[in-house]
Amino acid sequence: MPKAPEEDTILDGPIEGLSSSQKLQHLRGDVAFNDQIFTAETGLGPVFVATSCGGCHAADGKGHPSTTLIRFGQTDSTGNQFLEFGGPLLQNRAIPGHTPEILPNTSSITKLLAPAITGLGYLALVPDADIMAMSDPLDLNNDGISGVPNWVELPDYIDPPNSSLKRGSKYIGRFGKKASVYSLLQQTANAYNQDIGITSLFNPIDAFSLKPIEPEIANSTLFDVEFYLRSLKAPIQRDQEDQDVKEGFLIFKKIGCADCHKPQLKTGYSEIEALSNKVFHPYTDLLLHNMGGSLDDNYTEGTAKTYEWRTAPLWGLGLAPGSQGGRYFLLHDGRAASIEEAIMQHGGEAAGRRLNFMQLNETDKSQILKFLKSL
Image (cartoon, rainbow, N blue to C red):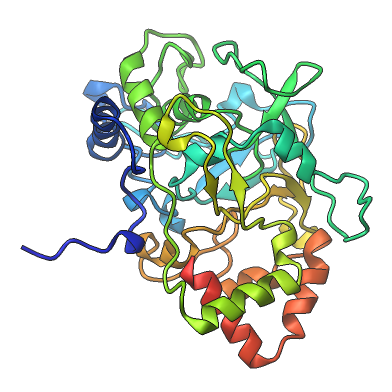
């Protein structure tokens, strides 16, 4: 038999320290996420994007341009004006006898590649107070960085803990390219409904008829998939003792990249002991930042502006080509074919950091890129 791959070369796998029952639930969620392929007979469609969760998240990694998602219709916080046309997600495929959705002529669109899904349980547990402590909307420390949370409305089935911060009727989102999703249960229910056309008790509106229908997936399956997402391990950095990697990390901090891509965060309490009060290294602050005109997609969700994006976690970056056909497709829509190209697209608040990178000598650039590929 082939030798098992080293743990730091793959993204999937459970966190260490799960109980026996938790391991079983993780496995059930793994099967539902990666092995369950839906058909018309099992609830697929009538319009859809993919036939399984793993269809967009190969090996739990980043998506490929061939599975690009298209969202449409919303340019500000007043809400999506194209829900009657099937928004916010374009279902570009259909089962026999039905027609895929077409984009309304007047809607704005954004193209999104599916993110890697490992380590999400850690991000879910960063206390709201810690996120707010990293926020600096008025740039009071004069570092050019003014990240803010995305305040979002919650669906009725989400019951936030008492420790969650609230602004009016809105709470801090942390998942999605613009941090527009509050929890992994919400993300799971939305993905089944919008991506696969599967209704549930939490999201009963059929994507085709836009009317409520009977749930097509059991609550237990949704909870198993949510648990799978919560209990996936964090990506493991490779070559940590390599001198160039060490030097690259120091340069990464010196030129200001770590001001948004925070190297270290800590979880709060969790009923999953293996996730409770743990230090981890995601390289994100979970905040929205002005990324400049080049990355303005004229589309938004929650309170995010069209040019604002949540700081993308960098952990797992070096393994991205493994799920992207052997090459990089980076940034929200996959436009960047290399890490350096992605850096050069950074504008707005990050423009100064981009300039700092450009002014590095070739040795320093090589070291910082080697560090990023080790993540």
